[in-house]
Image (cartoon, rainbow, N blue to C red):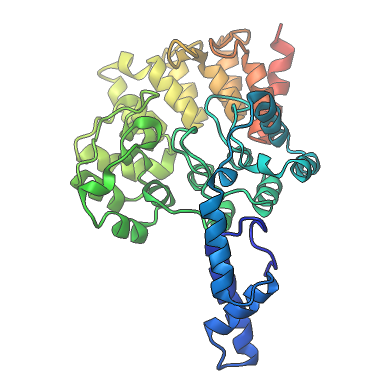
Length: 397
């Protein structure tokens, strides 16, 4: 067990409680009659306090008197921007040295190194699946619950669930991360959801991440049924234009049962939704009566997102456009951009062989698919993106 809480200056009370319980288990191996109060007293004395009550009072006072220190966001962008880029570089040594000089940087929000929003360092480390950086930031006092109001409501725990990082999720909970409605939804924690939703419809009051429907974050049949029962909208699109069933279909095969349930409750399961969950049989059947609906840009883009190379090849051979563009006017990227970002080597190869333009640029970053693959190597740390880059380099201008 670590002998220090997440932050010496602002210890996490939840961490201290768990540390005391852990200490009690050790004590009882030596003294079966030991009580929790004994373990709490030992822990308090390690931190220089005469009693557990005194330690707790000091923690409470620190949080009450210095809330701005915990969530300090007043660093100018000329400071926060390079700081977050440094975190994104993955150089733990340099990041640690920066924190030695300016400890409060661990709490600073700033412009995202790669896309929109204003995250904190912990958000960036989780998005990069950088476990070493993640652990160092927590040890240096990063708030496991994070600041979410400038990052569309996304907490570190939500990001860890979204990036399928169970070890990070466990570490965040261990450090005392708040498990609210959207964290519980994304973690598939039905037991916690029953408690959080016990108040009924008022439990859904407040802002929703991405300004969509709570159903977008459901990961279990119970969650979907309960949210619908409480009035969560089936078809409300988020700020990116995605409806709940579209968001759930982006989970791929793991979301297939949830998509089927949503469709049974009245949500529209479009051909693109079917493509995202890998339902090629459905698309083949539909093609016999409405081939145009099957070979649309949206369906091809969904198949690329799903990573289903067989489906992509079938769609292209059926007449889909290898140069299909997706996204709104602000980004207008090609399906080749998406495939390159995801490191989908076979899909990239299929698109290029069937005429995809490797020189096309997206509207937001003005970058080619090759640029996207190279950036993804750094951001997502997906080794397959390096193979995509090697495939695209000889054909790039």
